[in-house]
Length: 210
Image 1 (tube, rainbow, N blue to C red):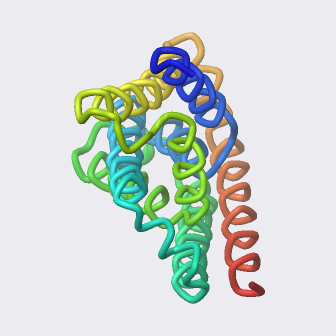
Image 2 (cartoon, one colour):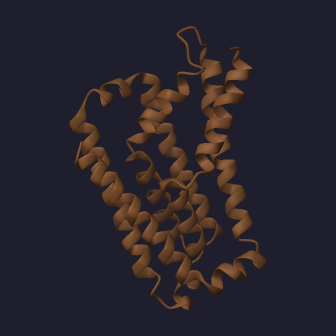
C-alpha cells in the first residue's frame, strides 16, 4: 500500500472514530452545550493534546510495555473511569443550577481552562487509546518511513480530529440551534452527565475485573 492510500485510510478510520460517541466527544459536547463555543473549542484542544501524548508513546513503542503490564492498564483504566464518573456527577449536579448562572459563566476564562483540562485528562486516561493508536499506526508506519511523512501523519490526524470538533461546535452554537438547546439545557446536561457516569462505571468495572 502506497503512502497516500494508507494515509487516506487511517484518516477515514480516525474520522469515523472521532464521530462515534466516545468519552472525548461526550465531554466536548457537554462543555459546548453548558459553557458555549469557547469552552468547547478549549476542550477539543485538550483532547488533541492528549492525542499527541498517545501518538508519542505509540510511536516510541511504549504501547508494548503497556500491553504486557496488566497493573498499569488497570490503574489507568480505573483512574480514567473514575474521572468520567466525577465529571458526570458534576454535570448532573450543575443541571440543577439556575439557567441565568450558567449563561453568565459561558465565556469565562476559568470555564475554558477547566474545559481544556477535562478534555486532556479524559483522553490521556483512556487506556483503549493506546491499543487504538498502535493498531492505526500499524497500517502505515514502517522502519523506513521518513520523519517528514511521520509528521504529516500526526498533523493530519490532529487536523481531522479538531476539524470535526470545530464543525460540531459551530453547528450547535448557531443562534437558531442554540435557542433550542438552551430551552432544554438542563435535560441535555443531565443526559450527557448520565452517559459519562455510565461510561465511567463501565471503564472502572472493566479494568477492575481484569
